Image (cartoon, rainbow, N blue to C red):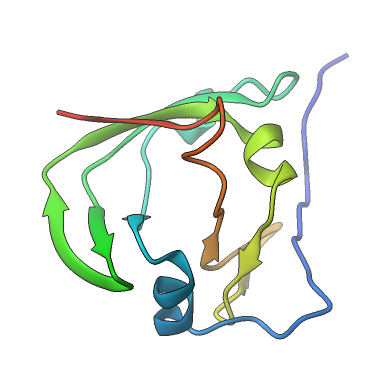
Length: 117
């Protein structure tokens, strides 16, 4: 037997926010556009460690710069346990959906760490 997920959809009773609204809601943080290595996440525990070369620094709700490369690690269950704000750009692609989201508490909790290279 194995653990896995075939279809995961995050939904909300509230209308999704545009990217500008998500950035404004974020205030300060990082915008990650894509990651590499997600297939190595532990499906039983939710632990992950990925890298990205597409990470932007956000201050005052505006993109102010970029990091060349970064590593991100944490636990998906803990990250999704807090307040999640979904974007309005959700697209279904085969057996999964993707879209923008803001995880406001993720950098405050024992969970996600961003390590600039």
